[in-house]
Length: 400
Image (cartoon, rainbow, N blue to C red; front, top):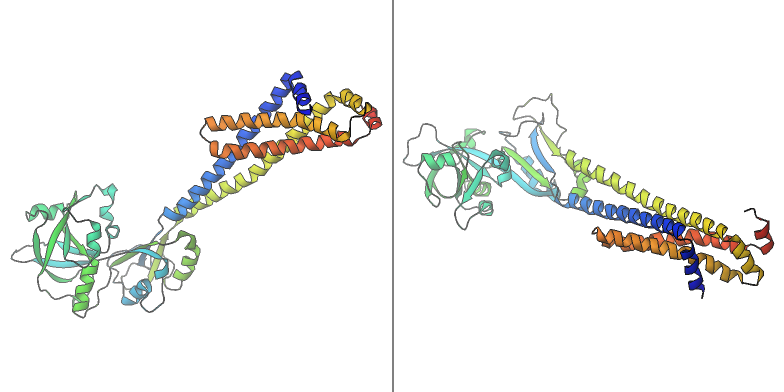
């Protein structure tokens, strides 16, 4: 009986009811968009934390030079954490390289190619896609093969053409000395057999690449240290960026543009985190804005419920007075007024949810519809209770 009465009251004022339903639907759509945007921003923030690379490069004190630094074993200890201290806990992938002057057995060459030992292709900027270099590997091999201590080679296209090589050929190479280091760091010039497993198409320099781990093993067998001429790494956990910066300050100084570029200067660490910090700051700001707007829209729904309730109750003042005069209980009068507004709010929320679902955002639409309808009903309930709790005399004394 109560429901049918409330439904009749809604249908008797179609234009006012449609306006209320439309406003509730618009608020539901807005709330759904805000909650969906906040969820999307939170997912993007997690993606940034998990996937964006923060590369850190060891440089000379001026923060510029990255080759021929003669990184001492002390720096290696800081990176490898040999003595139980250092930055190993923060490092995901260490990239090192060292370049050697070599000669090819049984070949008299005026300008022989250099051999660069690398820990990963990231240690060589020329391998980046923007430089137009495409590495072709022998079947069964890849960059992962270069991470072990096997004598394998990736050669430039110029070397491949100059010496008539094909993938799978064997080259015997004598390593004379490291390019940027004193002669006493040279390995023995005993020829070593390497297998050509890759060709860097598009690379015209006379360069060959082998595994840094292989050279390190060879140096250890001969009782010699092997130093890096460059070192860089990717941060393991971006959430620990500030902790890492504090730890790195104990071992590396801040880059100083006036320090000069001598390879014997103390070392600095360049942390390429500007893009990461700006992205995180932007997403965090947007999430905070969304968190502030969602309650604001809920308050707006509450206010609309109050306004709709006031308009509906004031339009039926005489009817309410008559109902009270004939003995209708206050609770029943309250339910009649409230149910009418709840129907309008629920219809608007349902319409908004259907619109959001049609736009492909159904996941957030249901929650937004429930929240919108609840806020709308809460505002209407306050108005209905105010009028239902008044005496008949007080209702009659109020001005129209």
